[in-house]
Length: 153
Image (cartoon, rainbow, N blue to C red; front, side):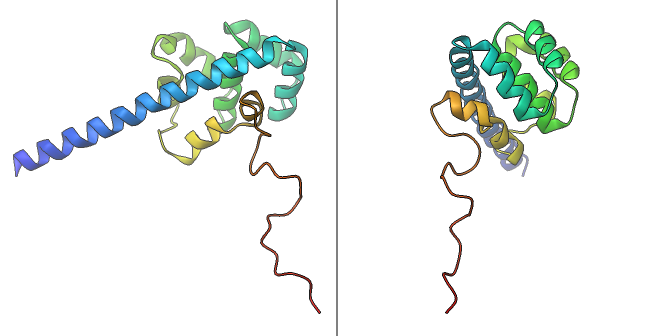
């Protein structure tokens, strides 16, 4: 019985570890993409994330000043929004764990790999725009979800 339990624990640990590594790689890619995209128009970037997160420009400026890249600032705002923790708290955790990456920071703040929150973290509007997508859910041009039953006669 102990052998089975030890094996199950090892499998769980390894699968969680690989998911965690994938999380780190994906978030690093997002930070890089956002930073490259924002570097061409930092004013537009600040306006976009201010609007996306409903945060006044002075707070955005303070976040950008506290971290090394626009991508890091975006992750601070995205994690703050998802976890409902103030950006200052996210920055504090970032400074303590930045060497471990955004995956560890997100995990420390309660975002588990594979969770709905994790998917929301990867799929923010600006992150999608930086990756060449339209941002947000779907990406179509219409207002509906395509689930209608047609015109009534």
